[in-house]
Length: 195
Image (cartoon, rainbow, N blue to C red; front, side, top):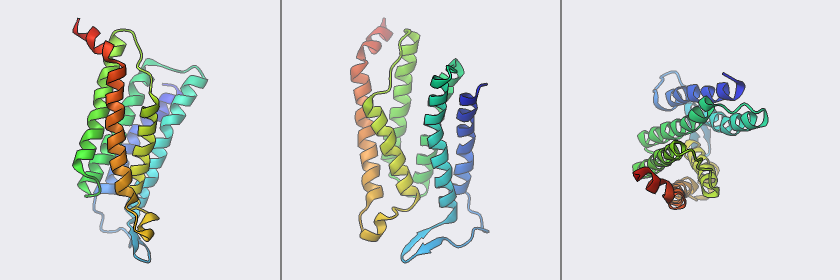
C-alpha cells in the first residue's frame, strides 16, 4: 500500500462524501451565496471543491507512481476504477438534481465501462491500451462540464451564455467519439478475443 495507491483510495472515499453534500437535504444549511440574480447553495460549493480535489488526485497518483517506480497491479486496477466511480457518481447525482440530461450521463458512463472492458481484453492478451489524445481531451472537457454544472454556470450566467449546457453536450459527443476511436484503433483485440 504505497503513497500513490493511498491517494487513489482517498479519491474513492471522497466520492460518497461529495454525494452527501449534493443529494442530502440538510435543514441547517445557511442561505445560499447570492450575487445579483446568481445563487449557489453552500452544499454545491463544498461538493465542487471536493470534486476538484478528487479529480486532481488522478494526475498526482499516476505521476508519483511513475516517477518513483511504484507502479503496482493494485494501482493499475484501482486508478481507472476510481476515475469511473467518480465520473459515474457525479453524473448520476447531476441527473438527479436536474442539471444533466440522462442520455449524456448514459453515453459517458457506457463509454467508460466499454473502454475498461476493452482494456481488460488487452490485458488478457498481454497488451496495454494506451490513453489516446482524444481520451485526454474527453477527460478535460468532462471535468469542465461537471464543474460548470455544479457552480450553476458561473460566470456565464451574467452574459446569458449557457456554457454549462454547451460544455455538457461537447463532453457527451467527444466522449462518444473517443470511445469509437478506441475501438477502431484496437479492433484487432476484438478479433483475438473471438479465437
